[in-house]
Length: 134
Image (cartoon, rainbow, N blue to C red; front, side, top):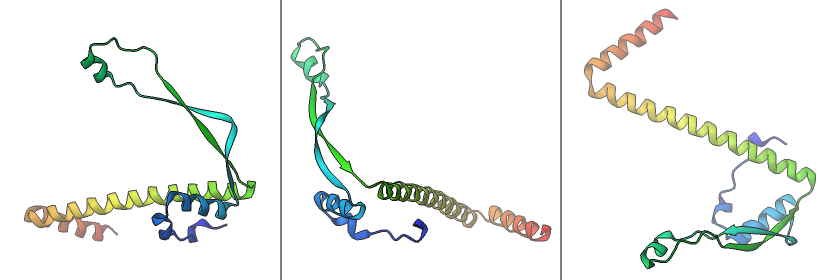
């Protein structure tokens, strides 16, 4: 599968969370169900300012809230597609960031050249020397 020809689905951004889950399940032939065996332990942060204001001792034990986990079952070939798609998106984001930084630097350099005639003249001479060197 060639991910370089893949088009980003902008309609996916405006869907509700449940619709996005349903679209994911349809695209990757996945099934989602609550796990019957595992729980996720989430620590509840302690509000130390509350304890300081009330004058009570700070608790050294932290409360833990247990949440059920979700199991997602995906066929192996669809899982490979998902990983490859994620890798492709990461590469595109890195390239986009690189070209955006280059463009912003070029815009900044251009502003400096237009504000300072001396810099502009030096830049033109530099460009001329580069052309002569080729």
